[in-house]
Amino acid sequence: MGYRVAVVGATGNVGHELLNILAERDFPADTVLPVASRKSKGREVTFGDTTLKCEALEQVDFSKFDICLMSAGGDLSKEWSPKIGEQGCVVIDNSSAWRMHADVPLIVPEVNPDDVEGYSKLNIIANPNCSTAQLVVALKPLHDAAKIKRVVVSTYQSVSGSGKAGADELFNQTRAIYVNDPVEPQQFTKQIAFNCIPHIDVFMEDGTTKEEWKMVAETKKMLDPKIKLTATAVRVPVFVGHSEAVNIEFENEITEEEARNILREAPGCMVVDKREDGGYITPVECAGEYATFISRIREDATVENGLNMWVVSDNLRKGAALNAVQIAETLVNKGLLKGA
Image 1 (tube, rainbow, N blue to C red):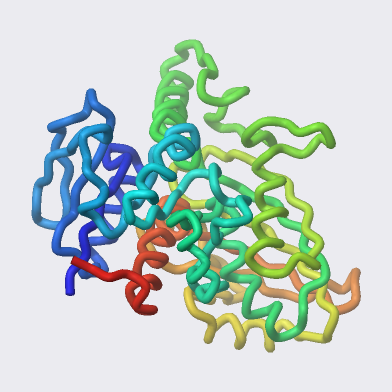
Image 2: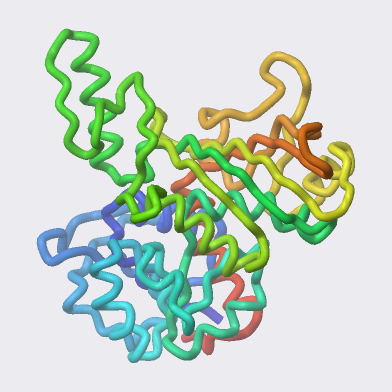
């Protein structure tokens, strides 16, 4: 049985990855329709070895589709996801619009796959923030083993997390610096080339940024509301791949070797942890990969039952497109879609 899939935002970075991953994973689709804005109607995109032409969002009859992979921004999702859901098509949304809605499950399939069954109230399922997705993949098996009390995480997030404009700005600023042209920030608040910016999304009243708040709220919703988490989110001059330095305090004793063995067996995790030059993963190696890579696992002697680790993942894949496709696969595997 094949399924009918619409990809909204097909011309963007994540939309491009959605089409790639649907093809790479042989998702059982009879129909794949790329959807974009009216001005992009007719624009060609690739799906495996096939070239497809985009349709305009306003002209698509979503009652003829089983799944809509939505990656077109929060404002558009707020307007269109309920309309699409009302037509019987299940929306898997990549924006922040629906993540904390009480009637919308927030899903990372390696963490809380059974929660997907709550989608039917609005026919919407939310994909978490990219930095949260890779974090909870690494935290889940450790939480099951020793119960996490507190997490301190510092992120090193690539410019692709802010879309194509962010990647273009890093490229253009880097080139400008080499030829002594002026550097003018546009997408970011300060120069991003050869720099780090401790500011992602808007500031909130308590001094945290919304990106940092998302990591707290989403981890609690998906993993455990009792976990205490504090985050510092930093944009760095890397094109693809988010990195995170993670400090964890557990209720129960767990050694670094136990943690290493648990993570080696955990779904979605890949441990690369050698105490030698280059015995760890960086964003360069994770780009284009499915896994969440974990390195630098070691005990934290400053607290009882503490561990440190380094977590790296392709933010356009596990942080967005891959996770959305895995949610669709979960719906299929649980028999929750009627199919064509």
